[in-house]
Length: 300
Image (cartoon, rainbow, N blue to C red; front, side, top):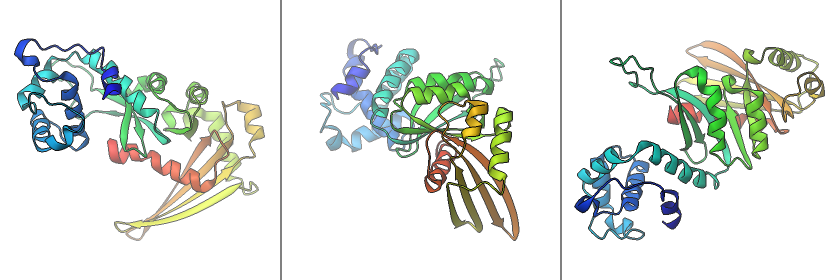
């Protein structure tokens, strides 16, 4: 509680008089717990506070009992959004210091966020998703999809990347982003497509060459909902010639993932290429690539 209170020390309490009888930090803690348990509204938070009093009193005082739904509604209507965002980012950055594993970075336009009356663009959020924690570790809003590349560096600054693997889609496969991840002590696994034209062409030519012998290879087969998917991952660490030509920051391995899907008697094949900043084993590369899609399936 002391650590959380320190993160929100700069958050001004907008309430006055009797409206402030409930401690602001305790209100925020109850709201956070309620949201983590699936709550969405002020009524949900108030219900959580009533039903979970024995649990909450283990670390909260609740001197005036559990707050009502009007209290939660009033507090979140009056709080300064800018101040709250900065304080919450501080809290999440402290939390992220304890995280490891894979952090997936991706952007998404929020549904129903287009303001027709004011002709304002829909809200585009770029999120850092902790794949093991199943939680958003940091988030930044941008005006358009094209600004996602400029938002990612600012998002990474909010995170402690030491010992973690950062995954991004092909849009954010950029030299500056790769260098920043390395500078912050992390590793990266980048999807590679045509936006890195010459590098993509050389990696594809290298991995598709029958003479190229993979350092490691891994195949998995999954069957679900009437679909059979076979994934074959090939990793090459013999990339000296690629570094001579492209000088990509920290590059130590390249990989190819071939996905074959069988559905209703029809077969389709898709091939994707990746950059890795460490000499990854094919089985681990398979896990990391699949974990990245958790941000699509579990967050977006």
